[in-house]
Structure formats: C-alpha cells, structure tokens
Image (cartoon, rainbow, N blue to C red; front, side, top):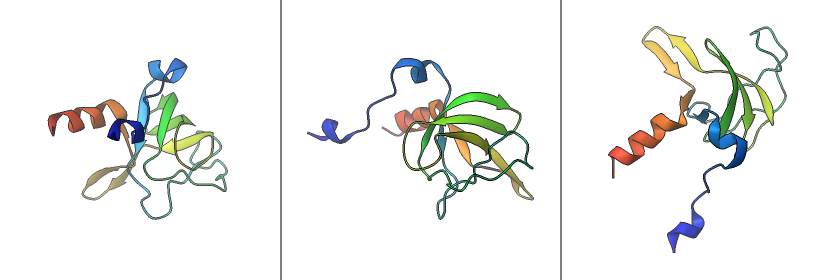
Length: 106
C-alpha cells in the first residue's frame, strides 16, 4: 500500500499557517540567516532542498520560518526569490501553489 509511504500533512498550529516548499538550493541547501536583515549572521547549517517550512512572518522578500521537514535549522530567515537579469528566480514557493500544480497534473 503506497499510502503508508507518503508524508502526512501537517496538523495542529502548522495547518493554519502559510506553508512554503524549498525549491532552491539543490546542491547545498539554502543559506539561512539569524535575523531579517541581509547583513544578519549566517547560520552554520543550511536548509535542505525539498524542505517544508511554516511561515512565522513574511516581510517583502524575507521569510521568517519554522522548519517542518528535512535537514536544517529549526528557525531562521530566508530569501524567497533571487533577482536575476532574466527575472526573479524562486527559492521557495507557497505549498498551496505546489498543491494546485500536483492536482492539475493528475
């Protein structure tokens, strides 16, 4: 039965908050900062590609998060997308947007 091998959806407080999925950092994970400012100290551990996080605060392009799955710091600040000459490159996407893509492909 494949249902036993799937990850369970978050329940409790995380179920009511905005969830984000890490789509960037495929090689080494995403850089996590200890504070909102880009000048804040870098945490030693990086957040793994594919991690699911819960939003604590969103301020423009900066996300204060609590980790729900995968390797990485329990809490910290991330950049949501990088500005590139070809347009913004997402590092995180809202989990509900991911769910809509999954539903439309079935």
